[in-house]
Image (cartoon, rainbow, N blue to C red):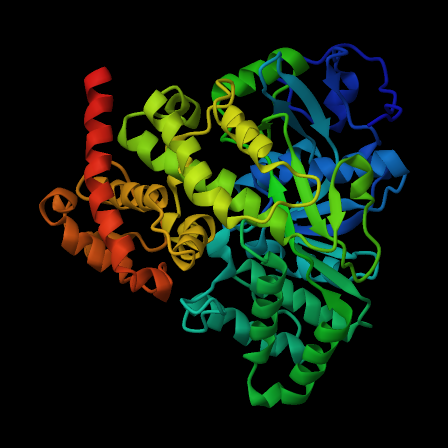
Length: 524
């Protein structure tokens, strides 16, 4: 990307404790090794609403969007970032005029850039109306989402879980929104807030709109379309005519392209903040850390205008599925495998797990034997080269992605990352031993949190722990544990539940996990 930097007024250096913001950045003596926003943030207007403005979005879509604005001179693609249930990101970004740093950490010296694409931030608990009005504006054309797998509120059948209180609450609000009521309380879920914004947009003229999900879900555009439609369809008969009109508009004027996203963005540490402070001379409470690599594949199916992301490295294609499956099955599946085995072996980060020759070899073997045979090679992509690049990225010692962080929400991640490959291998007449090891490692990891100090961070934590029974059950009752866990229809598809061969493989791999753990303890 080449762009002329907006000149900053020459003023005395601010004190080291000064916080990053428009004024303090203008006053700072920033070295040539720090990239400043290529467009003055004050020149940028909002055209995108993003739900889930965590570290990943700020290190990925926001960076692509800023680069696209700089490459084209189109400054109407600023971002309103919507947080989750916590106000923490608002407290980090608002005092900084929504400026923040992205610290890239690769094999070479770290690189820092300050990003100005995010122009405002909102907390739904207080700012629902602000978000809804921004979604309804004709100048807003796109909503992007990184709300994690569990944020889509799906039931075991993959559709919207209408039994959830949060869904019932937000459907009731949507019905009142459709009726034109004012002064409504806040929506709770990102999807509920998004659909209210779409309903308001329809009532105010119905300009075409694009919803762009960016979470690790197979066919995420189709899934999001189905869930949004289900939200609207759940509105009661009292607003049937308006509901049906909204459904017709959604079908005709709103598109839901699928995407594949890839960039590792681990949790920011105090050491990272100190490193940035040394480069920038300012305190940045919204700093995010990322690897140099980033990839974005987008289905080219937009309802209206969009940033020219393809000019800055994104791939626009008519078929995202091959890229999506390759990434989910090669990168995300082995990431989870390394997270569970790494945590059980006492490795605090994925990079540390990759220093264990046994785990490193297992990851490669699982890809070669159980994952590559299930994939169709995407256009312009060499899967063996991609495999090698993924494993190299995992081993980046300057990117301490913790095993506990990657291991969270396993019940939501397994179906997309691992179980699709399991089903394909079973259909091919093969028993995927390596993927059975991944499932066994997950079961053992869950068991290790029962009665211990480690909290199982998973929306189904209580159910999973109760299903296993006690921490020793994986050793004392492996057959019973496997039968009970694989019977959970919320996680395991019927083909996997009914496979005797896969049950046997997971049971045997529970013993393999114990062997790996003993070997790690012996080497410690």
